[in-house]
Length: 509
Image (tube, rainbow, N blue to C red; front, side):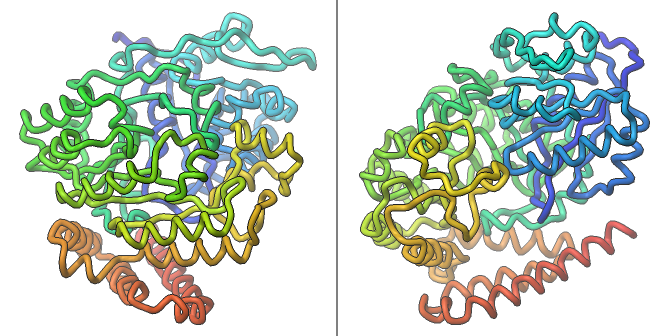
């Protein structure tokens, strides 16, 4: 596409705070690439690394500042938007992302926000920048005019994802981000680059829908096989990562497409150069897909198992069975893929016996990695609406509801917090690096030593200490873990603070 010079300057902001996760915000990278393709000057700030002075400079120099807002970062994004308006009252503030897409009018109540982009933003933000003074012309946005709120007709989803440029990851400090150690999954070699090749999910989980449909539409779309593998090849040639993460909500939704992507990776010989991981689902995972993934260089598959209680799975509208979940883990073992089970505790109407059932089955099937989260009713989802209707929500701050972790009860449970805490702690301790797997599973051992190599390559000796410490932690009897938890957490905090200090020193150099 031919670009043309423009005078507008757009700065895109990722407003996250807290511990730095080793990923770039792909949504912003995609918006930035689309704006650049139209000749619009684009910058980006990652507030995990940047300071308020950087944002002040951007507010002084830019015509538009766009924030990508998840529920958990809403309060932070609003605070930063107010700061930008104080610096430059003429600047136009745009909010987009999951939370504004669901609650556009509630966002516009905040006077510092001028526009909301609803749903996919690549086309909408370009249109908005070009026509901000005629907002009624722009589909897929909401805005405030003369103290009235307007929500324009929705924009059609981008049917041909191949028309989009590759996300511009260079908008962010990729080198610094890639130095961070992926805590989960605890075996992942890094630096790791993520990519997305599909949009939407055909399933109807209680804790996810209809929010996902509101952002990406009801139809699942995917890039062509060749364009998908083109990006894998591009990532390998430009960044030389230790691994690639396919961050699609459900990479294996279409069997033929998945297998064809794997075959194209092999056709280009990329399976000899790079390893990768993806997200799947127990009922979309079969021997053909497992075999194709393994042969194309995939080393790990994530499964949103959520529970090994059929009653809980039915409540969550998961459309899977306990038997399918177990079979998915067993298939990974058969084809020497690492299995990463993601579990949720504290689900609606879940009893302690349901939690115990999940614990028992999880310990029996022995996934390679277990990650556990406390269920959170993300605003806009059916789970949130159900709990609100029943007056069972106990938290008013939506930012807190957006977090999947935490100690506090967010809605009334049918079991006690103590029982939920027991299940959470037991599953969490099970998720540590497993010495038995290291001794008995060659594929597990191979990836573990690739990760250790990542630590050595980055000069991160602290991370080597942490990973071997996690092996010891995983060997401790559970009663001892509970007794020593406050001391273990203290040591972990010291290690984290020391790692952050070392990173800051490297950045200053």
